[in-house]
Length: 88
Image (cartoon, rainbow, N blue to C red; front, side, top):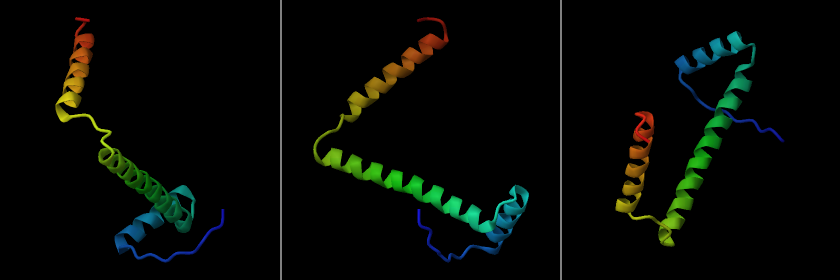
């Protein structure tokens, strides 16, 4: 993997906290900041891709009506509650 340099601005409080974490974990601030940005980007990327996929499904008519979905969820909840109370 090729690394690139990037400059960001953070609050003084965030910079201070990052410094404390770096000292406590014996990691550099740059390492921790890169790890944090990477984790954030991966999470947000997955969310955006999921939304795009869902919108494509909706546009193509691959959906479940609300009432049908709620009936299935309610049935699952009832079954779980019955198992939990020893009725099943």
